[in-house]
Length: 143
Image (cartoon, rainbow, N blue to C red; front, top):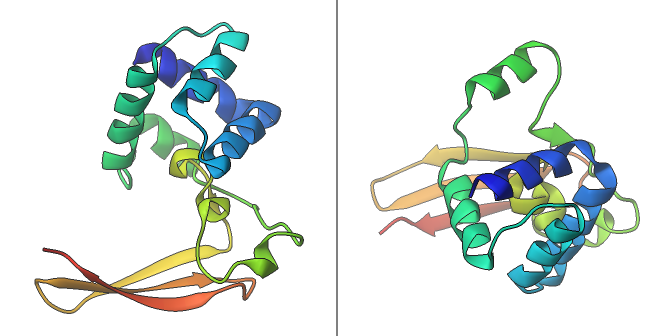
């Protein structure tokens, strides 16, 4: 899994590589395409390691590492960037991968998710785009 993490770190600082990963993610392509792209950049790992790393990353959503806290307190942000695309975003009526990036690594600056839990069995929240592309409520059954 370490090689996968190193590859993702490289992609975070290489916008062309991240764009390729996001294109693979949006197309719903096979994980083997990520493995092949990584091999082109000198990283070696299996599709199973990709799946394990992805599951681990998604399970940790919302948790900040010391490095993340340092980046945010220093004025930088590893969590958001302006992902607004005038050719794509106005066509959205719900949040998509375009709003959160590859593996939810970079949320769009305009995306917000406001939670309001009302009971033990349901979560109620509002999903909004500050650019007006969508604004809807979700009632999600927890159990």
